[in-house]
Image 1: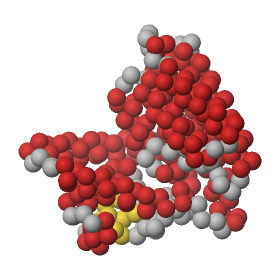
Image 2 (image 1 turned 30 degrees about the horizontal axis):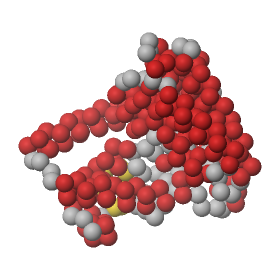
Image 3 (image 1 turned 45 degrees about the vertical axis):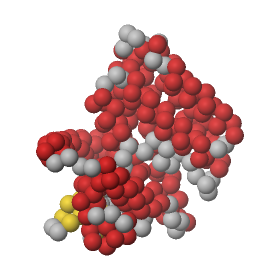
Length: 275
């Protein structure tokens, strides 16, 4: 337990250092953008490159520790190298790539990395939930997230995996927004960038529908309790529930990881976990 807590502290320090570096990099980019306006076509190509790269990384098409080369990537995506470089920089800031001599390399993660990344997300979401509960005007802000919870109730009854992932992600976005703080909202979004740390990463499984039903049923109980505690102004309870909700995600991740080891089954979201 002490070793895990120490690891969590170390990863938190690394996370904060990375955020500072990301802020400084983004500040430089913003200055550049003001003095060198980027046209809409370049922005569109950057978004296209970002979508393509992220989806291929998550799918495991670029193995961990492999080097990404700009020229063949730009040709494959049909974009110039300038927007491609912007996309590569963004993915570095998200933690999927690391800068090496002469370019970028796909990051490799351990299962410990994955579990701590989820725990960090739970800490930030817990803070968001507590801040939301402490707001004086929060009762007037809850209608959208309550509608999402009701929609999730219907989806859980129908056992719809795809729809659950979509609306579960929406719930977490709305939860972060309820804090009323852009910094918290951005940090929750950033903490969810790693594929295995996203709220819906392993809540659904096409191979084990029984486990899916149990997982989402418990998760939905958490959703109801979170909204209720925020509405009642119970900040400590809301924070604890958000962390417990993230703990459920950690269990799902461990089960998926064990399933891959035992059955030699490809699980895309685990493609970057190799140790």
